[in-house]
Image 1 (cartoon, rainbow, N blue to C red):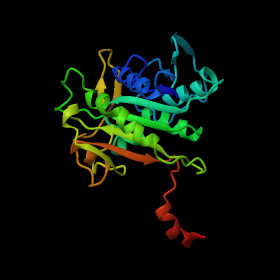
Image 2 (cartoon, helix red, strand yellow):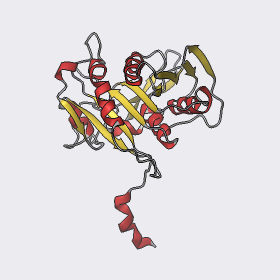
Image 3 (cartoon, one colour):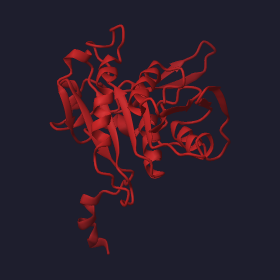
Image 4 (cartoon, helix red, strand yellow):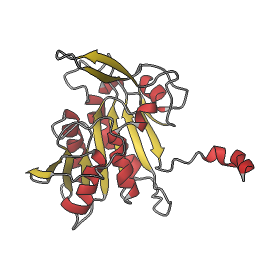
Length: 260
């Protein structure tokens, strides 16, 4: 198996090291793992691509490349430049430092990379490690992902393909904020919503007297509804959410017929 991995935390992020180990085990001794990751952190860029300016790419080692662009740019670079002679069988994105559950999904560059791979017809999984008081101070905060990642991915790869669908399914996997031994299992759940939790901005004045705005997240421990991602994660479960790039609100189409 040929696997392309990327992330949004940057090519030197510790989560990428964990994902590389998982990918190597998944690929097997006869497989290949290629890395095309952002040269610098790209958290929060979503599905952004560098449409109006070029992306510089540099070889950092054997099958290892850094691109000055977004995670989606990295997928495009992998498919159409780095691996153009033999496309990957799978794209893995992550492992993100922090959760991409609930509304975080909509902002995540980690998710954006997996979405781009799915649009290109490549099976894709985004992986994130929830942080909390039970794992943030461990020697390895990613130990839940490291211990359980291969098992989860093997189960997802065994799922039927839907290559004929206009928008292929990709998967969003979030590992709970607990030590590896405390993981209770895996749950297939919907994307949740942390009610009354939103991104915002806070103004600060620099030493030079200039005014800057910093983005702030909401409460990451806020509950979501039952059978949704963050609820499962905070209960000690790995969440797996199938996703598509189709943004249509299908449930609203029928009522909208009245305007025709």
